[in-house]
Image 1 (cartoon, rainbow, N blue to C red):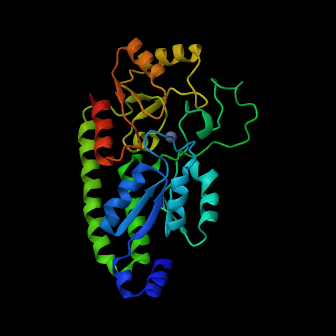
Image 2 (cartoon, rainbow, N blue to C red):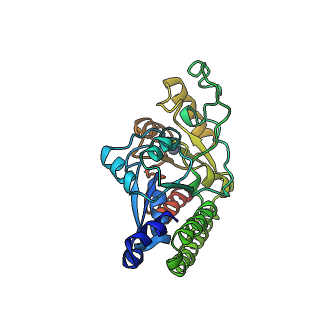
Image 3 (cartoon, protein in one colour):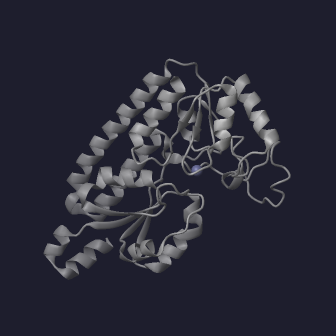
Length: 294
Ligand code: ZN
C-alpha cells in the first residue's frame, strides 16, 4: 500500500518497475518468499546462515536495509521478540505482516529445555529457579509441509494486496510452490512408510517438533537449558537411545556437535549434520525423512 502511494508520486514508470523491499527473519522464510515473489521482491535476511534465531543481533548493514524496507515478514521466532520493535522504530513506514497467520503452534517437546521452553523436568530443576514463563510454544513452524502451505498462501495474500499489478504472477508462483510442497510431503510419507510409527530420532536442538507430530515420529532433544547436557544427563540419553531404539542423531551447524557425536558413537547409530534453517527446504525435509527411515 505504501509502495503504491510512494511509486505514484514518483511517476508511473517507477511504479511498474519498483520491486517490493522485504525483510525476513530466517532463511526458510527467504526461500518461501522467493518462491512466491520471484523477481518482484528484494529480500533482506536478518538471521544469517550459521546463526541461531534464538539469539541474534542485527548488523549495522542490516539496519540500513531496514530503513529502505516496505515490509517485514515476521514469523514469531525469539529474535523478533527482542528486535522487531527496534527495527520498526528505525523505519516507521515499514509495515509488519505475519507469515504464520492461521498456523496452530504446538508446545515444545519434553526434553527440550532452555530458552525455548522454559519448562522444568527431571534434568533441570536447579538451573531454572527464576523461571516465570509457562510452557513455551514451538517456534520452528516451517518444519512441516502442512504449515508451509499455509505460509505460502499468507505470502501470496500479502504480496497481491501490496502489488495488485502482479497478482497473476504471484498466483502462478503460488500454484507451482504448492505443488512442490505436495510432492515433498508425498516423498516423505513414502520414505517413512517403511518404518514403524512413533519411531524415534535424537536431535541436539529440538527444531523438528512439527515434522515429528505430522509424521507420527518422536523427537528426543539432547540440549539441556540451551546448553550441553551434564555427564549424568548424557549417560541417561545414551541409555534412552538404546532402549527406545533411536534411529539417528541429528546435529546442526548452529549448535555444538560434540555431545551428539559422543551419544551416536556409544549407541552405534549415524550422526547426520543438517540445519532446520537450510534454504533448500524441500531437500532438507526429504533428507531428514531419508535418514530416519534408513
Ligand atoms: Zn530453534
